[in-house]
Structure formats: C-alpha cells, structure tokens
Image 1 (cartoon, rainbow, N blue to C red):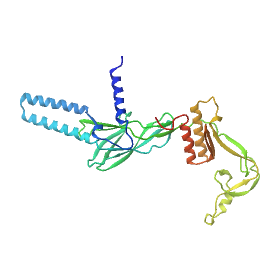
Image 2 (image 1 turned 60 degrees about the vertical axis):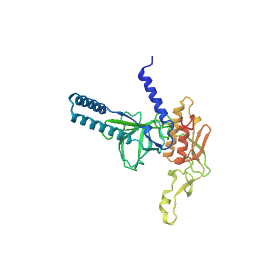
Image 3 (image 1 turned 120 degrees about the vertical axis):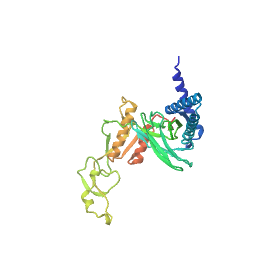
Length: 331
C-alpha cells in the first residue's frame, strides 16, 4: 500500500514541473506564480488573535475589539506586501561555463525589478538546497546578477536544477515563494584521470631536422615557428637582437633526426579499460599537452582534428569527449 506522504510528494513534484515546463528565456513572476502560506510565527499570531477575539466577546471589551481588528489588519497588510515582494520580478538565465565532472557548475542568473516598488530580503537558491544561501535586495527599477553553484556527477550536458525564490518580508508572518526553471545548460567534461600514463609521443622523420634525435648536427638558426620546442630557442642570438630594430625569436636548426609527434587516439587505448576511464585519460592528456605547449592531434571515432595547439583546439577536444556516445542536445 502506497504511503500518503509519498503520493503527496509525487504530486508536488508533478505540479512544480508543470508550472515551470514552459520557462524559456526571460520569465515574469506574475501573481499566479507566487504562492503564500503562514509561517509558524504567523500561525501563532492567528492563535493570539483568536484568543483576543474570544476574550473581547466574553468580557465585552471595546479596546479588546479595537486591538484585535488592528492586529488583524496588520496581518492582512503583511500578507499583501509579502506577495508583492516577489510578484513582478523578471528572471533571466546567464552564462554557464564548462566544467569537469566532480566540480561545481556555476549558473549565472539575472533578477530584474522593473516596477516602482523596492524589494527586500528575497532568498534565492536551487530547490534541493534546504536553506537558501543568497539573499538579494532590489531597488525600484534595479537589477542584479548572481551565480548559483551545484554539484556535477556525469559528463555531458547539464541543465540547472529548478530555482526557488522565497521571502518573509516585511513582518515574517507569511512566507511567499515561487519556482523557476532557468533556460540554460552547462557542458560537463570528463574528470581527468589522476595518475595517467605519459603522453603517447611517436617519432617520425623530420624534414627540417628539428627533433628529439639527431640534434647534434647543428645547422644554424632560423625564424621561430609555432610548435617549435622551447628548448631549441637560440637564446644567445635572441639576446643580441634589438627588438626596436625588428628583432624576433629564432630557433636552432638541425640536420637529420626525428620529431616527436603527439596524436591522442581513443582506439589505441587498451580495450580492457572502461569507456569512461579511457575518456578520462584522453581528457588528462589534452590538458597536459596544452600545459606543456605540445601540438597534438585528436582522434575519437569519426572525429579527427589535425595537430595543432590553442584554446579553441582544447575546447573542441574536450567537447568531443564530453558528448561521446551522448545526444548533442540535453534532455
């Protein structure tokens, strides 16, 4: 037999999902999306009003009636002001930088107040957080940008969890809240393997002689070209050149020898390894090659990137690893 609280929780989740299912781009929190209930202090205040009313009736106290009605009017005003503290806000998604699995994904959110009513003590956080971590104040016509972070576990596209906005302002007798599903996504890369093997360097003949072997056959210097090893820079010649006279970097030139070629090929990894572990190793190698400024090629299934270096190349390789075997669009 199903427990009543389990059935109620499922209905609440379905209701929240239905409420935020069509949140695309900027969203206006109208009054139909703001919900309100009394807090514990509000329930105690209602009990106090009831006691005052009963006592005033029993003893026919005119001042008691006046105090009861004034206090009740304050509670009604507080209920209206608490609702208005949320209604009318405009919510917009911002940037969502790419991260590695296991790191916290930051989601940028923008909250605008286009009305003439200032807003105070609006608490905002993801729905799975028991106690909201951020509170904002918005002047009339003002706006603010904040960043909410949530844990990541698996690679691929990740949508942010549902956001909950809540307020107790001004008296704390009522709690108003609303839900919002930001229309953004973050790409989660595989977590780099901690103790990965060395980079898979391959030797091949070098047309200009610059390489890891045959470096004893010095043949002179030439202009520096992107990808030349830093250890081959001719520092003495560079120091003699005056930059104001058109001086530039030069590198040593050798006759014969081989050059180290770095190609990261998913199919060359041991088949006994788990797919996720192989992706994690590839991610580590990509980061290490970039850190060491070693141009590298990349092969993952049908994806083939030529030997190069740079931020764009790194992002393309990590993106391919993150989406390997997954749909291009998040569910």
